[in-house]
Amino acid sequence: MTSSSFPRTLTLPASVCEQAAQHLEQAARRTVDGAGAPLKAFRAAADSDYALPVSVVEQAAACLLVLATETAQSVRPSALRATIAVALRLRDAVEAVHQPALTTRFW
Image (cartoon, rainbow, N blue to C red; front, side, top):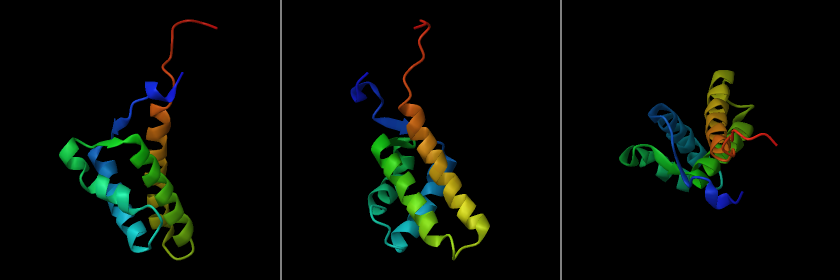
């Protein structure tokens, strides 16, 4: 199976997009490399019914994990958990898109 058979966009729930945008704003303020592009895309996601390119969602998840790592010692545990939770939801959405479709045939 080639990568071209996977969707290039995915649609996320509005609440996840809003949370991701909030955390990406923090990442951009802390100058996490690569946070600017996903932040812009997540801010504009409502205009596209929360459909985002898979690569942008993947980049956002990575930026949020970097943010969590960089702030682990300086933020409340609940804030750290919130950042990690959003990052993992984004990463899980990307992984779900990359899963091959189940077939009814047995090997």
